[in-house]
Image 1 (spheres, rainbow, N blue to C red):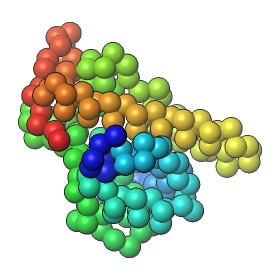
Image 2: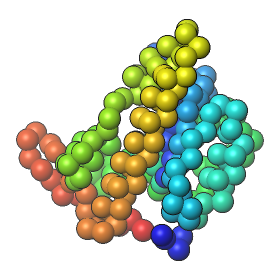
Image 3: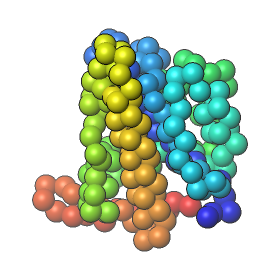
Image 4: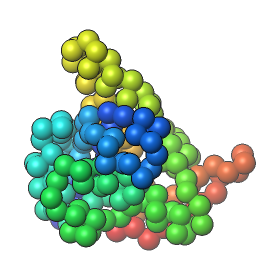
Length: 187
């Protein structure tokens, strides 16, 4: 366990960007499931739409919040539910933004995870939206379990990419068939 409380964070939405009319309407996406992993407790926690005060409390108590596009995507979606401006009140490492700053373009988490770790994501966000729609239509809870598993796996992959970068001082990604090492300075 780390002395620092690093909280890894991801969420899934009920709607797609096209459903709400574009990126400027992220607050309308609505959360289906959010997941965190805390190094202080060594636990994954799953949050539903009614548990977002507890999620916010965990994020505010973190020494560092780590995610992949959480500042540009997850926080704006969550902001529709909570009072504090999380980006301003938390210390964040958005690895996607850090990678963009270092190399001038965005990379997908799946590319970095697959190349650095040998394993990628288990599904994609559109699958999670379909599962949410299935849950709303049928009332069954199996689709919610699928969303929670997928989101928790993304948090795990995010954590492992961060840990890989801390341990090795670089991450790997694939570009046009070539494996490239990108130096990082993550703590």
